[in-house]
Length: 343
Image (cartoon, one colour):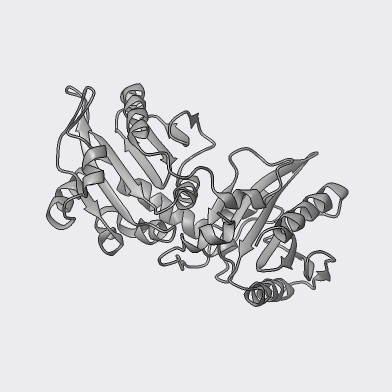
């Protein structure tokens, strides 16, 4: 499937329109700039983590039994009454976009923005140990499941061999496989290995579905920092006009930069977004023409640092942390070539 077609079938339901993120410090490296300008999403992610503690989880499950409805057959089959030495301790509850806030409160818009379809959740217990909560998010496509995983999981902490891609800290294990993002969590770090085994059993029970998102092929391969790829459906860099952004960090020599590509519905819309980004930067400092793509500019900002941006068809591509050198220019040229070959 072409990347454009794949994304049309996975359009987010209601893109997050959060407030302006806190400005980053001056002279930040590109990675820090990109992370800081996603502060709105980070705040919502932090709320999600807070709301999935053992006490609030149990309360939410009891509430879900009354208002969440019963899970479908696929959820019942995956969250079976028993899985090995684990026994289910409560009902399987289900949520959709309209009532997801009852389970994860303020983080619901953040999750919905990635194309959320449904959530099934329950708790398991092994012997007399603390309960383990299993949340299965149906995101509608592997592209959406990957995007939510990369935006929520701490992939830099400890990669785990579970599902298509997994990560974990203590007894909190999360992974994605096919169209599903799964979170398996227990309050006891001593249960880590058992919780990981449960997560792997759940991953094996899931149908494979689609693999890695096709939109990753837009990004150059050489110099890419492993597991730094992300996809933001809206408000990339805190700007409401930058959407459907795939990005990754790159290292060349002693420098680091972030490369990104935003997809729009038409070349005209991409052109408007490029003009809006240029106008934003020109409020502080004049930009310079960039001879790449079908029009672009080089800009500099106390917060963003050096930035190169250009339009190619219905894409807006660019680099954060740009500085004039052969390696950076070669990376941008590679990006332009990839965007040119994508319909």
